[in-house]
Length: 199
Image 1 (cartoon, rainbow, N blue to C red):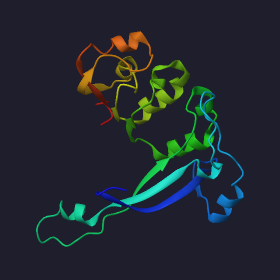
Image 2 (image 1 turned 60 degrees about the vertical axis):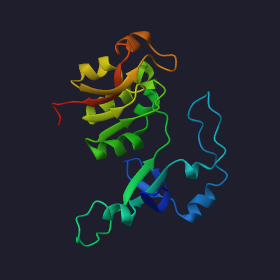
Image 3 (image 1 turned 180 degrees about the horizontal axis):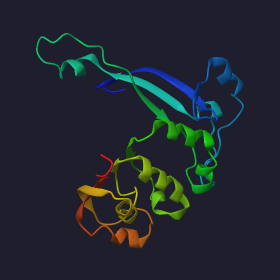
Image 4 (image 1 turned 30 degrees about the vertical axis):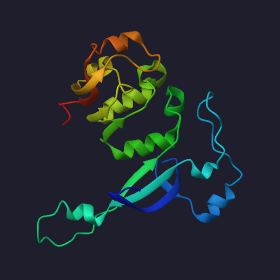
């Protein structure tokens, strides 16, 4: 994966109605071979791969030399624990998100989490993604985001504070001008939204 981490395993899965995970074995993956993955947005090309590969889990761990570099001299080597990255491919627009009970139950089971929003194409600026935006604001007390994340007016209304880094001169895709104006020109950006009431 990189000089800092090594891959332990790759697994494909589906979400059950209650939000739990079912991992796909070789027989199930083979059975789904002719079922193409869903086209999540009408402007996108339909995927040319099986629906079995829609959701993926990658387990990895820091390389031992990386762990050693953080240890005190003479401290015995500790086996680093596995870490998990999951990618779930879904449409997060209002109706799709609200009607996706497996996903919503999966997220509900996690409770409060730390959020990262990057490369969201300013969709969270739009009313069509209001419900998922509200989920983020209600369940992620700390959010690291670039400018494509939640506009300041929604974060402010939810009680978040901002710590900013970098510079912002305007959205790089067409987006709501009023939300653009919430970011004064040439101030630092790449926003950390912090709700001090929940930390």
